[in-house]
Image 1: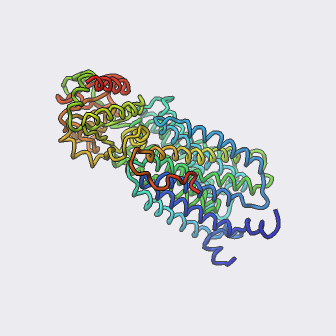
Image 2: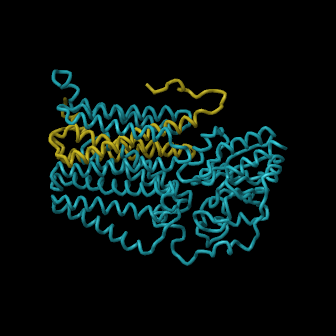
Image 3: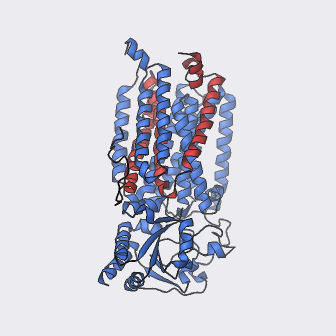
Length: 127
Length: 473
């Protein structure tokens, strides 16, 4: 593994405290903000609810924080374990419920009695 | 786990690559949401990205607490999936608020756990503490605020704006308390868990007081704002945990939520700050004296059979749905009525105000559920020019978004808010439960307009009655 990629990706396990990690993460933060802005400003009013619901599901990514701390945490103690367990449950509800409900909503927008069917109809499950 | 495969899988760079794949899928998936045809696939692509991110996170060696992780995930699935499957489309704003709330709660809890595992605020470098505190506070605000929003939408709590002057001082005090507490925590590197809990609780109370005074009509702005909050909190948690997937996903949500909030506020001609500051015209003293101040005009009441005749012989009917349609779940009845009108050669369109209902795009979702063709749903700017040639505007449980005072009366609390120009149409029929004013609590001169007639009653019952009369014609 090259030192460059370690720095660019900001995942150096040894460097979690260095200022370069902070700067890398801040750069990612700022760029993501612009990406969010660019992607979303094109969404029509009609799809605002699914958009909100979809982004709602995506911030369910906080579940990763719970997973990470639980999976790497040796001997966390009862209190911390309970807190993390609750966080995991909350995050999982957020992410799974969010995606399912968005899917349900969007299906309604798609299931129109239109002559031609929208592309991608048969790719149920997406994979 | 051991062997070369295990060490490859748990390599930090491999994990980073998976994260990059994951957030590429988020971005690609979200950009699919720009059109109704690509949206379903976009959402699923984002979900696949999420699965990849979860798998990447779990590639650690040694792997602790596997049983807890499995049980926790199963509970999440067991609660989230049935809730998402069963919720009625009319209850969607509550559901979104609730899912948003648990997300915010998760961020706050993670920050708390992080505090406990790292032994307090005494972490170097300091920026980790700053971001962790931010995620704790904003996450807690979002959790409690969303729960209150849920309570209001579910009508467990009064949906009307609660403006208590007495609340202003405690709110300011809370903001001060949180600010000072955070400053102390950062400056002293305190290891006191009491301080952390105090901050979480103060932020929570602040979240409650933030949403409690906000009226139902402002809910689209609030829900969107809380969504943005949770996203920003997640991004901050990502910085403090040094987890790039969290940063990217959280920040995308934070940015998009902020834009959406801004758009909603613009659609009401109000600033986000003024929405948060509480109910319409919160300055006090300018509240008109209820029904007596209805501009001196008289209200004309009509019957379902009259409405049916009027619409059956119209060329163009524009349906203006509002929260009343959602409450009485009238969308299917509306669609049936529209079908009947169309079979009689009447052109039917729907005029959708950006903030009609209780969340952004609320009406569109309900009408989509009832299979109303996408093309018939007109946004405000597209339909406003057409009201002049509209024979009948049928307003179903919408009020403030049709109030001509917003255009004409400079001292009206909603003056300047873009509205649907229903009053320009040849005639207007308003379906309404009673003569009470809307959430904004202000009179609507549209109701006493000579061209307007009112059909009182539950929206769904009224629409069904009109449909029956149409069939008989």
